[in-house]
Length: 250
Length: 279
View 1 (tube, chains in turn red, green):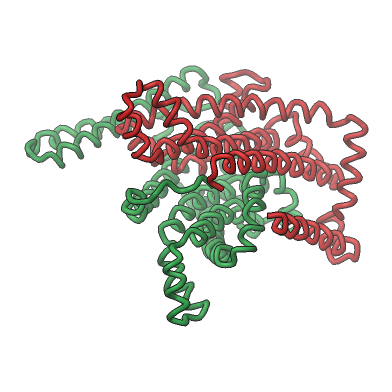
View 2 (cartoon, helix red, strand yellow; view 1 turned 180 degrees about the vertical axis):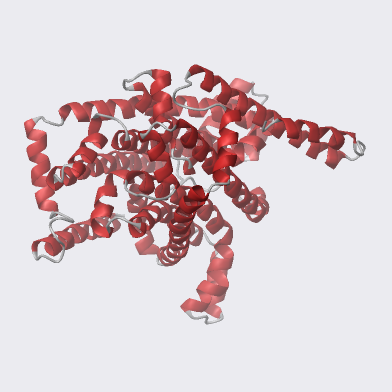
């Protein structure tokens, strides 16, 4: 395990160094890509100056709200759809094709429904994230081993006891995956929404810097988003591995 | 308008041979689907009444869509999207399966790459679009690159996981028969993991389409994404809604086909499988 982590770090470090070298020796035009060290330096300067604090707060609070809403609503909807096979058969093709629809196109609609404030962006993050949670919930409930359900019947468990003691723990790994995906999609939805349409937040700041040919700010902000998302991801990954290990499954 | 012909169509179906259980079930499914569509259209109509400035109603949209389907301009843009999408999909599938097979077969590199792939899968790739544009320039190659960025990773992940979870007996058989790596891939690995590859391609299909459309929305003078963003910018709500409707119908139709294929290939296996580990 630790050897694997080591190689992983080496691969990433090698990649960053390669780009750094290619940029420094002029193989990559400085209009195209900046050396990573320069991105990092500019990012630190930006963070120090406090210029982007408002954007950071607005983006992350939107993502957090969208995430919480996605997970709760997605779980509830998944449970309902799972309980109704006839409804499910109808929903499946929609769920399967869901992510090919660029939901950002509904931003004007959401603005006219919800007003010109943070809620249209939260809604985009939610619309993006909730489906991942629904799909994961369905998946998890599908794969509760039948033996366990029989066990619940043998013990004459009540429905709520069965749900709490058997179904939820058995489906937990899938629900966890759903939560991870919901978070990722909430990020994608909110940032992409800001990027294409809105007038604030990190996504907007990146698009603005791009249009102003301010490559340094653009790459610094990209780096920031990448670092944050990867860090959140890694935290979830470690947590998940620990949970799985405790169950003696990984 | 979209509902009326379907309603009349269901009556003769109901009357025919009510004794067959299978037929009754298919009639029930059909009615369910009909009710579902009616509910969706009703919801749409409700949303339309709430905000008439941002969306057109179902009836009007179908009319606009029909007009679009007859216009040369639409087909020119659809063709532009189709070309970029086709190229991206082929690259995503071929590249994804090849990389997935390699990473799955070589256990150590697979273990190194797995969380990195998940991380790549979850970053908001749209923020990287300016970089893609700077590297590939305006035009079809940037769109294709962006589509591949979205679509290739799920194909890799599904293929890799499938190879890693393959029945070891099959690998041993290949070794006993002294198959070369290429033969092992062609004769053993690919047939064994085809169901999972189909699942991966199904997910990759949606995301590739999304990537191409976003690419067109952001920096393009052609394609359906351009029609959408243009509709937003000049407030041409009719065209905007109609293009989105056509896009959704196309995506749902293709996904349904892929889903049916996926079910057919995976159905038997899932019934007998022990619950797989969540990835």
